[in-house]
Image 1 (cartoon, helix red, strand yellow):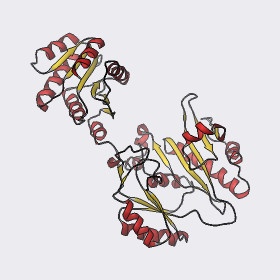
Image 2 (cartoon, rainbow, N blue to C red):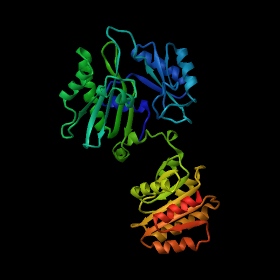
Image 3 (cartoon, helix red, strand yellow):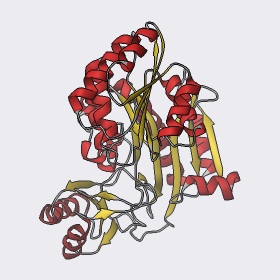
Image 4 (tube, rainbow, N blue to C red):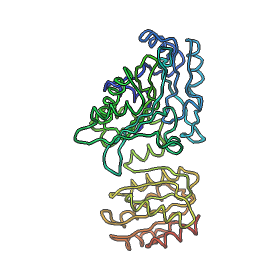
Amino acid sequence: MNIHEYQAKTILKSFNVPVPAGIVADTPEKAVEAARQVAEETGCDTWAVKAQIHAGGRGKGGGVKIAKSLDDVKTFAKEIIGMQLVTHQTGPEGKKVHRVLIEQGIYYPGPSEIEEFYVSVLLNRDTGRNIVMYSTEGGMDIETVAEKTPELIFKEEVDPATGLMPFQARKIAFNLGLSGQAFKSMVKFAMALYKAYEGSDSSLFEINPVMKTSDDKIMAADAKVNLDDNALFRHQDYAEMRDLTEEDPAEVEAGKHGLNFVKLDGNVGCMVNGAGLAMATMDIIKLSGGDPANFLDVGGTANAKTVEAGFRIILKDSNVKAILINIFGGIVRCDRVAQGVVDAYKSIGDINVPVIVRLQGTNAQEGKELIDNSGLKVFSAITLQEAADQVKTNI
């Protein structure tokens, strides 16, 4: 589950990871009041006004502004709240901004130079262990750093039995070129960050940049946190952080019906039971000359209601020119799914795209007969090749 920057920093702060003081606001007036409170707490005279959406690259899109007065805070908040912010991660349609984070300015003058670093914690799937990945090139896309200067990316693999060890945290600080108080602060930061990652059951922590301020403090200037959905039962307070306005409406609706749905950009909707079969189905669609419009797994207990819900979700996509239903009858009986297709077709009524149903496994023949005898514009198939041919004919 993705969360906003201000929510991520709340989690970090609860594990003693240093973050700038900040308050979220959803109106320009509240933004000004938030700026006053932050100034009283920290003594700052500049503020960052930061759009809160589930996407990176906000600064380049005009979603992050540095305010040098309360009037600036109000002006920038008015500009950002309600804007359709377009970044390299949102796509051309962008995302609407509903709130901003008013945060203390941390680029203040001091005795030493300000520096930016990159630090992330994630799972290395090749080894089955967590790693801390870090670089001196903070503020840049890590993909760009990996492509152009891979020697500037360092990794610390963490033994799950011990967690991040102090000597590893010192190695991180050393490789980042730190010394003195900044070195000690980075060691504490790295240890706390890893504890936060494990303690919050996250799948990704990405802090870009980690700031070394002019007075040698280490802070998480930005924070991208992905929480593991499967562990949310242990963190009810985190589950409440979910922002449905940031998610695809079709995916939200699918979740309500227990469907695993991911929207894609193609022209053939697909409804399948099982993730592996779904991947094979998308391959078949590509081989037939089409493009999958979605990934939709109805699971092993598909029935008339789930099939109907899947139909309705797929049909909301105006790009869909045909629907391929590919069911393997193992746990679920094919005739039951076929009856669900017929019932859903009649319930929905006006379905203007061809529907191809491929059934294999338990009671596949009975299911095919139900489809063939329904009198509806539904084409049945037994083999994958038949299904591919039907898709090719109808798109």
